[in-house]
Image (cartoon, rainbow, N blue to C red; front, top):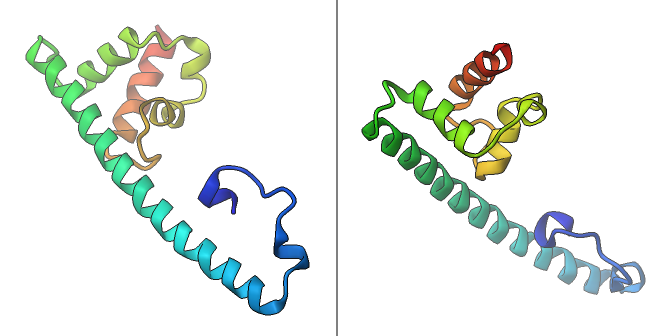
Length: 117
């Protein structure tokens, strides 16, 4: 339920429903969950395209490589030492990326370099 709608059910009829009604509720949840999984996947693909586009824009504006472009992006977004402490997962969260995105390792390298400086 929470994966489908973002919150836990309150006063839900499931607990008092007949076995047949419970099955209807369950089947409906599975249908909604499948839709939500597709929606999230599409959203993450779109956000990855946007992040890639940001990297390309920064490279056109003078960043020598993707790593430098990512550093510039984090600087502009105002990531501070507390944000950087959470590592690449926090960057993924902030940009709506999948936590196992293709830039994860590069983001981790940039974060480590930024923390050193």
